[in-house]
Length: 266
Image (tube, rainbow, N blue to C red):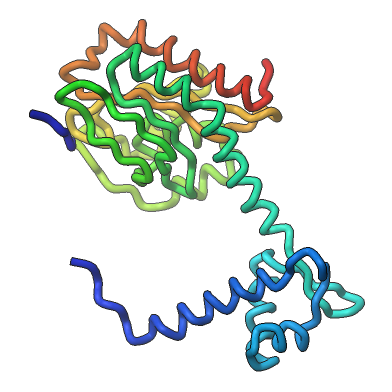
């Protein structure tokens, strides 16, 4: 557990060409400025000042990733649906931030513990925001920190409602014992996720970090899909189990309020 209280890697010789290709691919996407809905490969090569073969290779790669589309009739390229998906994620993050900030800071003030907003990234979670406790002894605030989903309260809320195929694929990824309390057995994890589905919240008791407890609840968007989770985390010495009956409703209430702001009504 990390509390607050009273040399980089050397670049590989092959990094240059790879980074150059990435930069050129970005320039290629930016060539679609709104005036030209579709652009041919020859025109792309001319605008970017690169060989036609290079433009074709980059465009083909972007098509395969869904970032570009290609007309079957003309062979010309257009921006792909994958960019819309990425943009939707960015918009979701802004919507979450604008609607959640005051509620999250109020929860921190009411409880005196860290309040976190987490999103799922494949088998992990990432803290989009982590509002640090005002207490002298507190968890270190780590916005942007990445943790495994399988052993965190926020992660449980984010994966509990996955479809069976997606959950099976996620649980097929090797897991490491982070603390003596970490559940790594698949059956035990599935049982925990079933409890989350039934209760509408998750409680983590030193499963991802020694000495740390967390209570989390899911945030839903308009269609009912879970897009984030709210976590209340603190040191075991303060987050006593006898306090859980009063803390859990506070966390779920904030998660529900943010869900309503996202358009969810149940």
